[in-house]
Picture 1 (cartoon, rainbow, N blue to C red):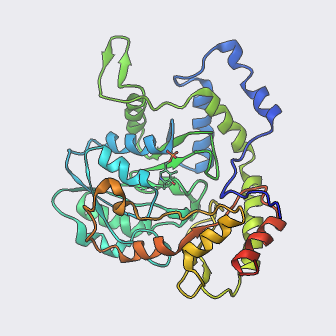
Picture 2: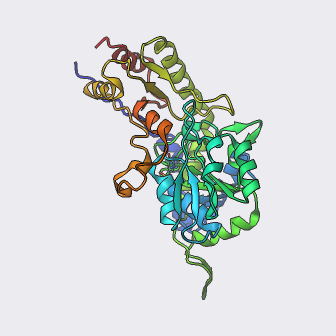
Picture 3: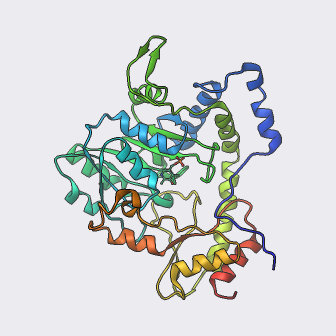
Length: 370
Ligand SMILES: *Cc1c(COP(=O)(O)O)cnc(C)c1O
């Protein structure tokens, strides 16, 4: 059978006509980047949508995290408590700021940082905690804040997966000292490439504005060693268009997930990795856990799906601390839950247009029918 390939995701886009119409004014203004009007408009609309007091747009999620960390001015060599069960970006942003990642294990139930293991890892050099709302599963924000307050640490959340998630009516980006979001083409909401930092204090807006534009404060004045991490106007306009359809996009994804849920019930060795019940859902990912009782295990299923043109992702395997770039430096740390999850997790295809028939096809392979 000549089957059409199914990828793990497919970027959400406005109609061609809508986008072309929206970018037309750029041919009049010739203002393509450097905090133009669409950059400002998107910052405003995202502040409202995400229910956060302050937001600074960035060129991507990774640089949002690098800039957020730099904004707090931690001394080089300081330690940051973080999770290894995440995309490599989280760890890289810490290391590239000249800081030491100290890896804390995650909870087996939802994959977020185990708040009960954080205190044991705190030393005189600790300056911050960088947890991740992995798959949109909400970290224990209250306990983490208590620990941070007790030891005078900053908390910066990697909320790249948690776009639009609310906790008790508050935007997820309003917890901690700052949070970062990714608007990469593969995320639930995209600006082609893009990201943002959210935070409470307006002084941080000024700081980030400075850092994302080389630290330039005037024609003849550079006050900081900044970088270039500004979002351009084409991306900002894509963001404005995609924001108009975010609710319907999430609704479609919810329906795909409901279909999966119905079909994946009671298969030995397969369970849906739902996480906890804190916060609203954004339907950004559909992770499952494949245990040893499943024939061939996780890798067997991954390969079998691939043989049928279905590209799932071992998202996240291996854990970041075991990556080649760290040369076994962290091999002996206690992160057994994180390693276990990374050996069992598989993210299944999820996007708006994924049809019921395609979900049935994917599930029939998981059931071992083919
Ligand atoms: C996508 C992602 C990032 C990086 O975002 P980009 O926009 O791709 O740079 C950071 N952290 C996590 C957890 C991510 O999934």
